[in-house]
Image 1 (cartoon, rainbow, N blue to C red):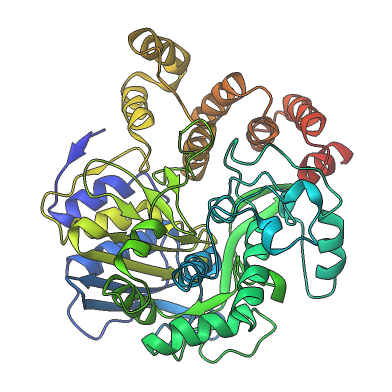
Image 2 (image 1 turned 120 degrees about the horizontal axis):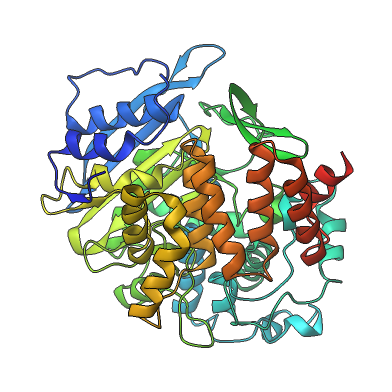
Length: 495
């Protein structure tokens, strides 16, 4: 397997994506002769089986390319157009980050202030958590959507009461844990300090300013014109998620109190216009933008990986910190990604209607078509330490993983493998059908983080996929011991 290489875009991208599933997607709808970017997008759609996709590219403050590909609605053969809306999922958090910084600029909010200063009615143990810790997912608060708990309009009030009775998961600032309670509180805070519902504040201060008529809050219950249908290849077997061959409908629900976490829909062009306005000072002043895009720090001074190539988390914005072409990169629902390369005056927006498309894995390859010195590495966009390890194992075999880790630690005692990054690596291998190699990676993660329920859960899931029920049950049992709320583990053991 090749290591690092430059564009020619098509050759570069093809080498990266040949690892992915090569199954055809619906034909794309083009009105002009396809260029290299179009060919890369089409190849990704075929290999990842993405039904529909929208693309926007911003270069030097101008939208230089818009693309619409495939089907917004597979059942009725409705093509994606420039007017098609896609759910943004957690990309919504980036808009919330901007809203918070607007309140900071207005002198109404202090990022370093404890949330108890503004909302004393919250449980006393929550009071010391700072606004910045909410934004960067380092609060330690219990997650209202823990273990993928379903929160709807019918039960959101009861669920909110329940989560307030739960203890902190860790001391604020001690570590990173992606958590929707954080953004529920930020929504309440925006509403309180702005004097209007958070959705109206974002509408007036961002969407109206940029003129974004096709961007709004809502979910599958709302009648939203030109909304793309959501799809997935995931199904559940013995309580555990599996990626199958059958395309299924995805019904996405974002109850009102959690729509700061994932509640917006938009088009690629409108998101691109929003990025231009943000960088040109129409929404925030330059110092505030710098603060918005600065990754959070733990109490020990370190940053925590968000997963894969995203190795930090700023104020609602995941970050890809690296020496060459660093980026801030909101991603949403495993289906859409927005990469901004501030040093290169480039931004790429990819919106899809497939959960599991994870376009963050190929956005850098699209960027390489505009940045001649952009180098795209194989290894699924992993952090440098894992990228080097991945290349070595592709050459030697994944059975040498423990040996290679020991060798790396002998050479560098400070050598670290973040839990979330290793887990993302393992699931990337699962998606490529390399279950045995993924098993080796998950086994390593269990050894590195023996007190993490998530590492045992991933290992158990892979054993189940390989048909080893005994070891799957053994590791799901350990998962439950560490996290009694893990429903997938409980369901598997029950069956």
